[in-house]
Length: 163
Length: 352
Image (cartoon, rainbow over all chains, first blue to last red; front, side, top):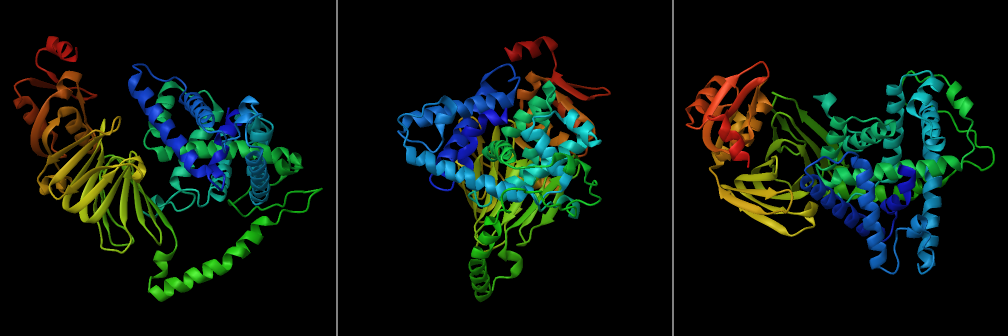
């Protein structure tokens, strides 16, 4: 799920220009979710899927409104024509930099946490499979995931919030 | 108390990561999905954090695919006895270890030193110099009072939760659920409370913020506050002075301003529940924060507006009070105290 949506989410840690757009996206997604939640008599069965559908639609609208976009929309729809190529190059450079930063971060995590992240995010194994492989409980696997993600999020997102 | 103050990682990041992990595990039941939706909708901050965590997860996939990793060696590594002390270098075969991180740290050093010098010259204590993240939870039935690092007094109602962040430039509190009052200490840094996407800025004051079912309610018992939408970037929704309350609808941000006796607003600090022309549903929520035995209110009865002043823990008086209402009747069961309108046929009729 999250891998498919990575292009939509990429704007969050971009350094220039993107922050305001990402923030608009968050606010608008929030409002639409709130409206859908209040408006629909029934429940939204899968809020996460709903959240990303809304965000994806908004990102498309945003990209259509502007000639260029910090969100690499071509990744989503292969609409590479007509988008400012310079922006994409910059984005690719940023992605590269972030990847390098993440690799350095990963090296500082305990071996088992790293192993869990590899099996989950690179190999797409289920928690149950990972738990069996490591000989621990799925609860423990989840703890590794939460810890690993939190560390990376904090390191990457440092200063991203307008406190 | 020390256990409840979680400094790192921030409570919000950890919460978002836990929801993310739960979603990846799959098989959430309807109740868990509902809880997740509610958590997302607490404020745009939650939604933003969830999207950011998802983004990090995606980026991790990218990064891991580009790395030579000996998974077997990682799995074979002894399980850590203590978190964090089992640091094993990745077997990077081709590329040299990445250096940007340390280099960046070095580049920041002169800046930090300058900032520290500036702080000292301003006479600001070191405890104020760096961001402080604090998190407080008050459990069901256990309202509490906390003195924050700047001497601001936080009254936290039962079943309530706040995150506090103090930086060099500002004091920010996020009300994540429930109700909290603030007796704000004088300080050159502005004091702001964020709740359900609203920002309440203090101008030398005692005030109260409460997340109700459909509205956020802000009451001022001393001084003045300003309320803005969109986490502080939106338009000004209310400018309140002592003795005023504002109720802001979550959905359309419609604002209703009322007058209220300042003593009434802070009555809950002393364990009293005071309500004036309030739907019974909301009054019941306030009692249910405190008491083991719950009030269960039918839809029709819940809409009835009542005025009362009762001790939070005195359910006998509350029952007597409810039974006095000409249209209400109560019944005690193992689940709690049921409150409904007198003629059951009417209950249905009310709902129409």
